[in-house]
Length: 232
Image (tube, rainbow, N blue to C red; front, side):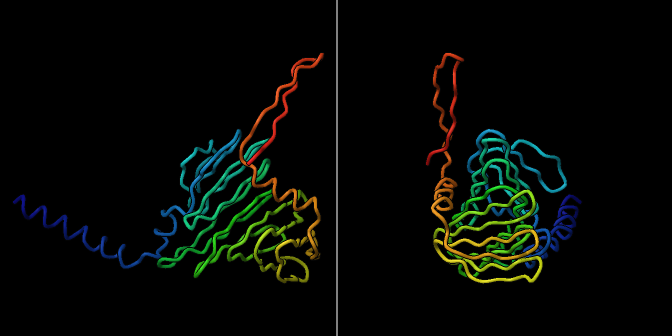
């Protein structure tokens, strides 16, 4: 009698196992497989899992499609994707991660709602890596740079290395390629401006790479002055 019960249970479970193995690109696979991990948090970093409330982000926490990350004042989140791409979410910024798995490839799209995000995207062979803002979509194959998304939705992209294809999402939806040492700006009407990056922009790019928060304490007649800054 016990043997019959064990066989019955096995017969019920086996079809489910076969179905899962034959459908690696099913919705279940998309939602449960992590696409990135939180590598570092500085000060106030919060994470919102799909269907859950905001909670404090922790180092080593896996990120799946639909997860959101936001940072507070003088805060930072360092995120690493499964393809070794890195993004640095600077202070007072927020983004949402989307990923679509098809067999062994993953199409990634990070939506930046506001703030500054630096990126180092590993060379993509057969996968897609995109960044989307309220005014543009950028397709990346292996590049370094940063995005600024302003309160009115206008978006700035500065490219330090590689080539990025961009397309506006508003107005005439103008597009083109942005190379190393260049920038592109889309205002909240969708108007596009492409040109050579200024010295200030390139300094901002270097600043996005800084991940170590340091403090200098200075005693003054008014009390102690604390200066905080990031370094690589």
